[in-house]
Amino acid sequence: MLRCDVYGTLALGSGSATFTFAFPPTIIVRSSGKLLDQTSSNVFLFPSNSIIAVLSGGGFGAKGTALKIVQGGVAGASFTLTSATGPCTCGMLPDGSIETYDSVTAIAINSGDFTAAGTFLGGFAPSADICSGGCGIEVISGVTLSTAGLNGALNFDITSITVATGATFQLGTPGASTGFKFTSAVKLSISGHMSFVGSG
Image 1 (cartoon, rainbow, N blue to C red):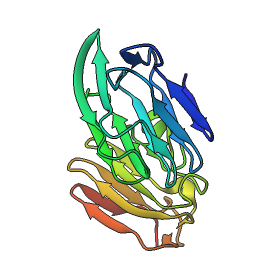
Image 2: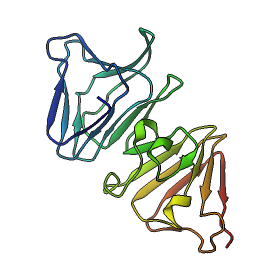
Image 3: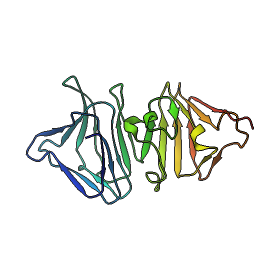
Image 4: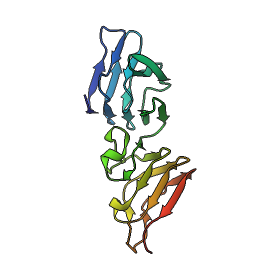
C-alpha cells in the first residue's frame, strides 16, 4: 500500500493483535469513508514517512487506538486516538517523531514548491479537492516552501500556515510583479521566516 483513498469501509487487523504496515502508507479517509481497527490490542504499527488524513465526516479506528512508529523492529513514538472522527491528521516524520493535528494538514518535509507532491510527507500535497473543507500547512525546520507554482494566488481553502523555527515560507514568483493573493482567510504562525520573492 502506497496511497489509499478510503470512500467506503476499510477494515484492518481482523484476527491479529496488531496491524503492521510494511511500507509507509498515505491514507486519506474521505468524508464518506471509515478505516476500522479490528486488532485485538488496538495497535497499528507504521514505518516513518507515513501519514493518515481523515477529512471532515470520515472516521478512523476507534477512540483508544494506538498508532506507533516501528524502526528496525523497535517500537518508537506513539499516539493514542482521542477521537474516531475527522478532520484530523497523523504524520510519522522521517526523524521518528509523530505530529498530530485536529485538521486536514499537509506537512512540508522537503524544500520545494507548494504544488509538488514530493515536498510533502507521503506525497500528501494540498489541493482544491483535499482542502474543500479547509486545510492546514505545516513547514518543518530546515525546509523552504515555495509558492512559485501557484502563479501569484492561493485559490483553495487553506485556513492556517505554520512555519517552524528554521523553516522558510516564500510568497510569490521570482521576477513576477503581480504580488500574491490569498483568496480566503488564513492564519499565519511564523516562528521561522517568511519572504516575498516577487519584484512588485
